[in-house]
Length: 288
Image 1 (tube, rainbow, N blue to C red):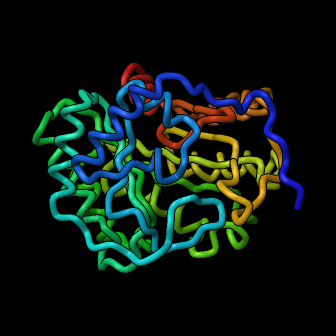
Image 2 (cartoon, one colour):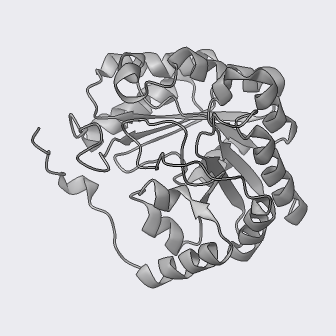
């Protein structure tokens, strides 16, 4: 299949490489991973230059093999018991006011890693109770008790990405289930309605505009507060191919639609990813 040429609006600013390297060195010294690097995020240079990062816990190897994702799925690593302390230390050294914590999916663990998420949240709170904490979690295979471990730790935001329209799940996310992902967001509100919920979707993989609108409506049915929409970029020739590059004007239309449906904040732009300018969403919600 012919690889589509990227349009001009997908060019990434390559400045401030020295600042990026300084952050990367600190993360290596603390044996920490970031989804910014592992998933090859197009915004990683901008975020690293601003001394922000999304920490990826529970190793770098995923138990699933989604066709859109650049994270590896080789031999799974043992959970590092020092990771919560090290994430908290890095949070302090980076001077973060809003920290994002995500993970690979670990279906091999009894609780999917939910207890480890809880330990990381508590360790960050011990450093500074005022730090806003956002977690981007897997579906924990629909385990309600596992999810409760995370909500009991009371992060400010729980993000679980719906990723795509239901019709595409078999093609690009075969080990997940659309309705189960919706249930995760529904159950967060059931367990603790004070926690903000967030989700994200990729476009450019063959979806119709009406299908994206329906996903938005499904998310709002379960009171999802925040939404991110970004262009899918295939990490390699082996991954699912890009079907279309969505124009900035179309992203603006998605943003307008999301806001009309009642999302408190919609980030919709070609280079938007789940954690991009995450603090802005919480600040907007707190001002309502």
